[in-house]
Amino acid sequence: MNGYEAMAKILKAEGVEWLSCFPAQPLIDACSREGIRPILCRQERAGVNMADGFSRIHNGKKIGVFTMQTGPGAENAFGGVAQGYADSVPFLAIPGGNPAPRQGVHPNFESVPNYQGITKWAALINMPERIPEMVGRAMTHLKHGRLGPVLLEFPGDVAAAEFPGELNYKPVAVHKSGASPEDVRDVVTAMLGASAPVINAGQGVLYAEATPELIEFAELTNIPVMTTLAGKSAFPETHPLALGTGASSGTLMCARFLENADFVAGIGTSFTISNFNAPMPGGVTLAHITSCAEDINKDYRADFGAVGDAKVVLRQMIEEAKSQLGAEGRGDVNGVRDEIKKIRDEYMAEWGPNFVSDEVPISPYRVFNEMMANVDIANTIVTHDSGYPREQIVPFWPVQTPRGYIGWGKSTQLGYGLGLALGAKMAAPDKTVINIMGDAAFGMSGLDIETAARSNIGTLTIILNNGVMTHYYDHFPHATEHWGSNKLGGEYAKVAEGLGAYAERVDSPDEVSPAIKRALEATQNNQPAVLEMMTKEEENISRYWR
Image 1 (spheres, one colour):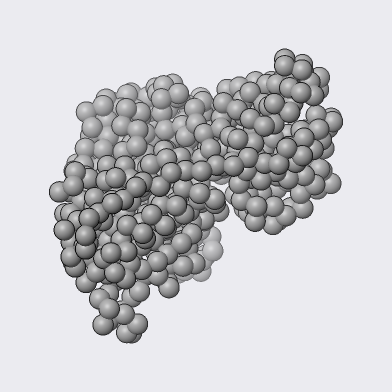
Image 2 (cartoon, rainbow, N blue to C red):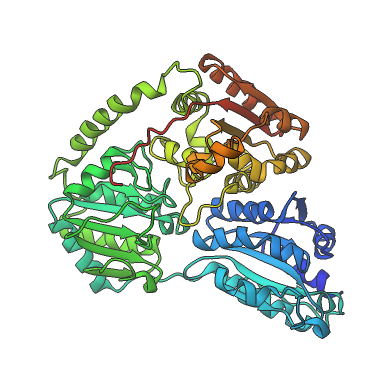
């Protein structure tokens, strides 16, 4: 057995069922022989994004893997890994590496030094006998602490060499910890003593699979819950205590409750100041519950803190609340549920006309409304691309189940959503998976529709084609005026059809619903579908704090 074969057996032992890849990389064939299905993407970044989406849907319990060749393959994958690092997503990248005599020789690309700034951990496997050790260390990093991508550089000479002795590899177990009882007591006491507390739930709740505990604690105390962009779906947005998402766009409920809050408890969030997070109000008491101690006091000074896994700590908080309030908790002493309903009614009265608009070109909000009417939201996963698709849909998609929505931000690479959707479909083949992207994003990643067609990955891609590129062309008016139009163009439905997808162009609002029905039928047969919606230049965004 050589190093490639040893690596394949170890990945199999760790539960890896498939990997995304781009040649030339002999590990692909070694994994295939071991029963690990290779999904060959059209470009490396999409393959990384697929591994990313897969890991998200499984909350890191199963790890997405991407492998690529030495040099150009590792160079091309860089952007996708950087995005995953920004969003704290655990996946394993395995590039080839230069043989020992060529390491450190310019201009040979070496992954470890170049990737160290965008991975949680990066290392080179320098001897075949160290393969089990190094994969074990990688998996330990992938399953503990602040999650993020890990890279193992696998030089061809090491990988092709004979593995000595017997291969004895034990999969890495996950270990969790709770917070100190005193910290939990102080946090809960302060929350219960506040007159207008708000819970801000982040992606850490999803990774910990702590949604049931979050719901129980919120109902026990009648404290409303908002989510971050990455945390969207950690709390069901149909719940009477749900405020929705607060990101670069967000709901009126989030805005109003943050304006009036005297206490905010962040659970499973980094509390990072970003264009893609709602700012925390000044002068309020803050509590920070996180598994990443280094995030406490990073951007906001915390008055209270508790360090531990969100599921474990929320269970501690539930027991503490019961000890202070009694087993039944407390009623809605602050009238929160009625106030949320009142604001939500006001919010939808303001925005509702957009969802039934008969405008031509089509309003994107009409597209979202028809999506909601034609899918089982509880069994659907939705993601988006950056720019208008994200800003327009995030406040309004009423996600009901954990990871029923993949929200992402902090770094916002154009074209990211398609790979996420493909990986999500690999993770949850029985669910409807929809990616919403703009025309510029399709230009970045659209060729991987062919990956979906060739690999029988039945996702639905909805292109909101408004030709405005989120108005980036406003930054070069002289060029536009004197050198011709810088607006993007193309017939994307025809491109998608040529790539093997079921595809339609939709020009009229009354055609949207029938087209979605036909596209969903195609996805049931494992064929990807693409709907090119000719939409208006809609700049009306649900944004209340920018």
